[in-house]
Length: 274
Ligand code: NDP
Ligand code: 8X3
Image (cartoon, rainbow, N blue to C red; front, side, top):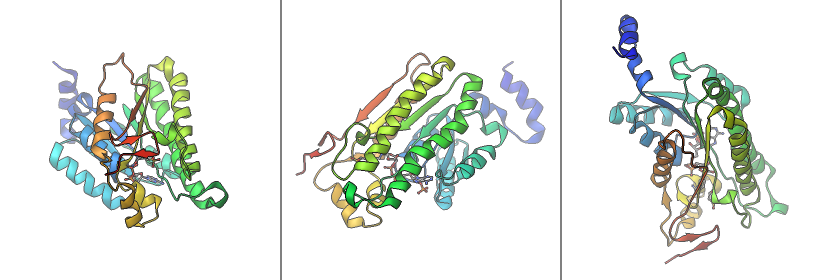
C-alpha cells in the first residue's frame, strides 16, 4: 500500500490531502506578480508543481492564485513581502505552514532595472533599489531557503540573470553590475552546495517584453514601448518554457547556464529593427 495512502487515511479526519505533498514538488517563485515570474509560476503549476508565489502587490498574487488553482488544480500559497527587507523576507518564509516548507525549487526571479544614466549622473536611490533587490534580496531569500535544501540534500536554485550579466552597455552601469553579481553568486552557490547534490542554474535572457521597461523608465510607458519597436522581443513564456526545461532534467543533469536572445538581437546593443 503506498505510503501516501496510509498517511492520507491517518490525516483524512483533519481534511488534509497529504497525497498532494508527497507526489508533487514545490517551487517558490520570487517576483511572480508579472512577467517572467508569473509565466513561470503558471507553467510549473501546469507541470505538476505546487507553487509558492511572492511579490509586493498582494492583489496580483491573489488573482494569480485564483487563476492557477482554477486552471491547473495545483496548490498555491501566496507570500506578500518586499524582498529588499531582510526581516520581512525571513518572516514570510517562517510563516509557511510546515507542509509548504519542503521547497524543491527556488526561482530567484524578482528584480528590476531603475533609470538609465551615465555613472556621473546616476541617481543614488535608483542604484540602491537595484542593488537591494537584485543582489541583497536574492541573497536574503537564498540564505533562508538553501539550509532547508542542505538539510534534505536535494534542491534546485535557478537564478534569473541577464545578457546584462555577461556584458555592460552604455548607461546600464549599476543594473549590469547587479546581474554580473548574480552570475558570480550562481557560481559560488554551485561550488558551496555541490556536496549536497543541490543544483544551481542561471538563465540570462536578452530583451523580454514584460513590465521591465515600464519599471525602468518609471512609468513612462511610451519610452518603454519604444524599447521593443521594430523587432520581435522574447515573451515571458519563452523564458518560462526554458525554466521548465532546466528544472525537469534528470537528477544527474544540471544546466549551468542558459543565454536566450531574441533572434532579432545580437549581444546587448545590436537589434534587427524593421
Ligand atoms: P517585471 O517587472 O514584469 O517583473 C518583476 C517582478 O519582480 C515583479 O513580480 C515584481 O513584483 C518583482 N519585484 C521587484 N521588486 C521587488 C521587491 N522589492 N520585492 C519583491 N518582489 C519584487 O520584469 P521581468 O519579468 O522582466 O523581470 C524578472 C527578472 O528577469 C528580473 O530579475 C529581471 O532583471 C530579469 N530580466 C528581465 C529581462 C527583460 O528584458 N524583461 C531580461 C533579462 C533579465 P512586485 O512589483 O509585485 O513586488
Ligand atoms: C534586461 C535586458 O538588455 O535591458 O536584463 O539589460 S537589458
